[in-house]
Length: 208
Image 1 (cartoon, rainbow, N blue to C red):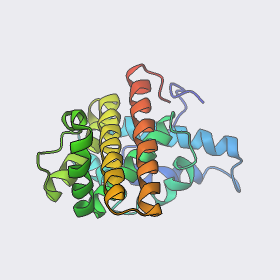
Image 2 (image 1 turned 30 degrees about the vertical axis):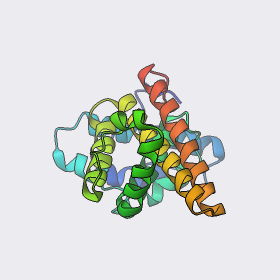
Image 3 (image 1 turned 120 degrees about the horizontal axis):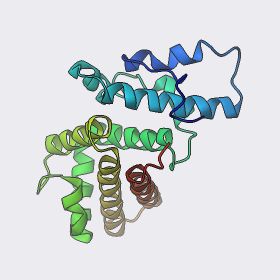
């Protein structure tokens, strides 16, 4: 379904978005319908915030995960490919949530990664050396920027964060070997690559 379809829903209050869409569907939606809903809900959220002058709307979108507002969207967005808008936003929210909940560990991995891939530090926007509050505030700024500023840049910044943290995680795994940390490094690297590619698609107008 095209994002330019004039019949696509537009919502001013993001938290009520998915229930409004789901209520119009009888029974369980088939996979094709679910994917249409994933795209429409992501575009509605993005457009609704971008065209809003209400700072409370922006605040609610940044706090969506913390307020459990993503619960109903999770089933839709988490299944979407990374090269799509819902898939990219899902990965951005997951990274944001982890940073907010594990600030100390994130700062530790960031410090380790910044020694391995120092060039990425400038794109992430993290302070040097990063304090937990600064790391969390920067991720808030990246998420806010996805909805109110340059989506492509926000996704590429998030990709740089995930990639740098992946290198930091791998570095710590070398010092203290463990399969779980190695798997975490692999997942973070994959997320970083996916967000970076989604950022390029957004800049080229191909993220939908």
